Image 1 (cartoon, chains in turn orange, red):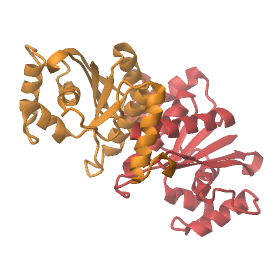
Image 2 (cartoon, rainbow over the protein chains, first blue to last red):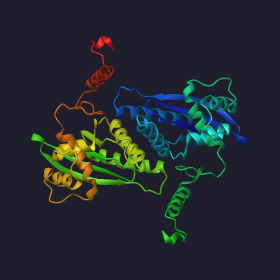
Image 3 (spheres, rainbow over the protein chains, first blue to last red):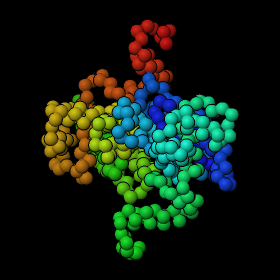
Length: 195
Length: 195
């Protein structure tokens, strides 16, 4: 199973790709940072990030895309651009029928180090260890994107994150799952005829 | 000149289309609200909004897209979804080479009523008057999208908004304008050789 992790950003958008094999053995595949020109207009910047994400998804054809969840209370200067970059990653995945998962930075740190408040250096060391790397792949600040991918691979089985859909479904099964999701959303306990 | 205004939102995204003729005579063309299912996952909701915006842009082929500027200090529960919807509108426009303008709600109210703190009903009445309508087009809550489009048509000549590019340029001219924009962004006052 190929997992593509995204550390969203408008100026620098980290992408990390890993493979989760049998027994949750994880292997490093790729890491990169997609950049946009801070002096370009916002629409062209978003287009650059989107095109970069699309190129990665079409190159590595991931089975899941794991994106860092953005919170409104974060740094006000950049939070909207970060949210927009995360939105573009979700759009690109949805256009390709790739399931999307959102994990908070705390969830990623917890999954990787066992400590939700771990320091960046601790996370980086564990990322190296888990992926059996001799050094952090460059660019080093894409470690968060790899951490997102690892977090998704190591998440408790059956744990469905917000935005995540059931994986490996036929179109008919997906439609059914979507209807089921709606039904649950409406908090109904009747049968399908109640919809 | 066809202007497509967007009142961004993840649950309801307003779209208003007007034509600005000679002497700034404005005519109503279209108004609608693109919806996404609040019970669907966020990636599918973003895809629905994006597909809806793309359909409108491809149907009306606007010369400019005017989007309400989103601020981080707004309602925390919805601001990220609103910012993401605005980002999708910018992306769809950039993919089609359509210039993008961002106007704040205050700018729109000021342009339409002369009062940046006008009430919603005052804005709606002026939208009807400017577009020579006998009633507010339905759905009524898309008035903000029409107001965005009107604001862009009535903006002071030569006023370049953030995210807006010069209109009606050849590709070479556009590249030059972009380089010029970068140069200005770097706050240089030297000639082109200074870049």
